[in-house]
Length: 306
Image (cartoon, rainbow, N blue to C red):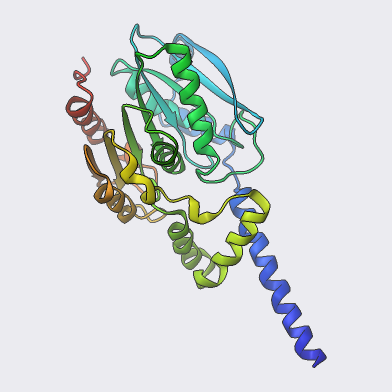
C-alpha cells in the first residue's frame, strides 16, 4: 500500500511540475534579445536609424488599466487624419513594427507603434497571448482617438500574437478601427497549444491542457479557452485583410483560412508563397505591398502610393 501511495505521489508531483513548467513557458516566454532584434532589422535593411530618427515623432507613455506604462512612439510626418497602430508579435518589440510603419508612412498614414506588456520598454509581469493585451490595445486606441479627435480614420495591423490580440479587441471589446490587417494570427489558443504540445512536448494534449488551464486560471487569472479569435470573429463588421505564409509550421495557415471563412462582410485573404512564421512581409515584400494596396483601394478608398 505504501509503495502504491509513493508511486501515486511521484506521478502527481511529476504532473504538477510539468504543469508549472508549461504555464511558466506561457507566462514568462523567453523574449528575443532587444539588441538582436535591433541588429537583425538594421542588417536586413528594414530599419534605418538615421531615416527613422529624422521623422517627426514623439515618445508616448500610456497608462495600462493593469497599472503599468505602455511605451509607444507616435510618428506624424503627414497632415492627415489617417493613422495606423502596429501590434507586434510575442518575443518582439516595437522595433519589429517599424518595417510595417514605414510601409504605411509611404502610403500617407501616420503611425503609432508600441510595446506589448512585458515586452520592450513597457511594464507588465506576464504574457497572456491576447487576453490582457487586448485591453491594452483598447487603451492605446482610446488614447489616440482622444488625442486626434472624432474624425480619426484608423487602421490596426497585427502580427502573430499581435494579430490575435487585435481580433480579440475588435471581436470582444469594440470594433473600434475602420480596418484591420491580421498577419499570421492563431484562431484559437487552446487549439494552437494542442498543436505545439504534440509537436514540441510529444505529449497527448488532452492530458496536459486541463491541468495547464487550471494552473493558468490560478496563477494569471484567465482561461486558455477565452483566448479564441475565431469565437468572436463574426462580431467584427469592418474589413479585415488576412495574411499568412503557406510554409508557416508554427501557426498553421489553416488557422487563418478558418478565420477568413468565419468572418462575415468585407474581407480579403493573401497566402504568401515564401517564408515561415511571421515572414510574409520579409520574404514576399512586393506581393505583400501589392495586396495591401488592393485592400486599401477596395475598402478604405485610398489612392496608390506615388
